[in-house]
Length: 256
Image 1 (cartoon, rainbow, N blue to C red):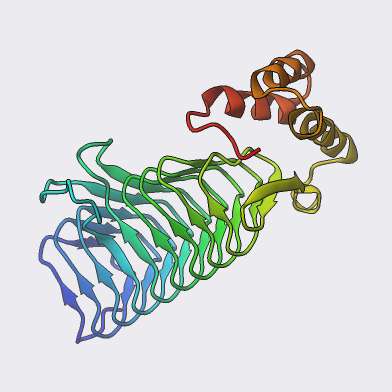
Image 2 (image 1 turned 90 degrees about the horizontal axis):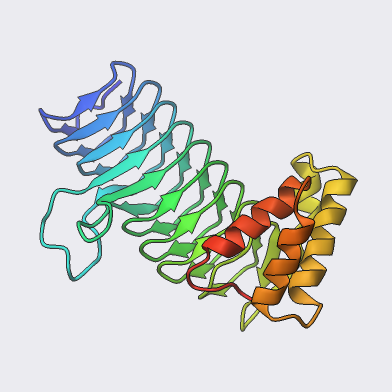
């Protein structure tokens, strides 16, 4: 299961059925769980924990030192869940001591070729990042967010659940859940209705979110006024409640 040309540190821990391709390098303090497949010419550095049934394609770099001038060799971590796919030339970096010291990736995510996930990012589940999408440090991404090709997200931003980022979007503020953003300059274009329907949102739930969108983006209200009005309308409407919670937690303000 491990190619004869692969280099595996004696302190790395691999489940017995992990596959490792030619010329891959797995460093010290790396753990790789059952069923994970490592392609050719992959580099994995520690401290990195990779769960079960992941696929890492050729030339990916996982668990590399963070690209942060403040980083001075401290022991930091990368933690990856289960059933994720990392296509060719993906790069994922460990955390920094100035933050929690860990970059975290959940389950069932699909990362296409050349994507970059920087230090201290926190990614949830069922996220899709298309070719060349890039996250700067300290970015949070919630469930089911989709990034089109060549998107870039500024450090410390948050991308909400079920949102859709169009190609070449440059995100410098938080992206609320359920919305679509695109263009230069990047702006919010509407509710991600089609994506929501595909994920089982019924017509009533989509209508509630469209009504909330109109209050937030089309009413002419200031953000604090719109947030207050949405708070009053949110009881009994889980999607709107999630939107309100996001607005209250936003530290960089939102794309608007």
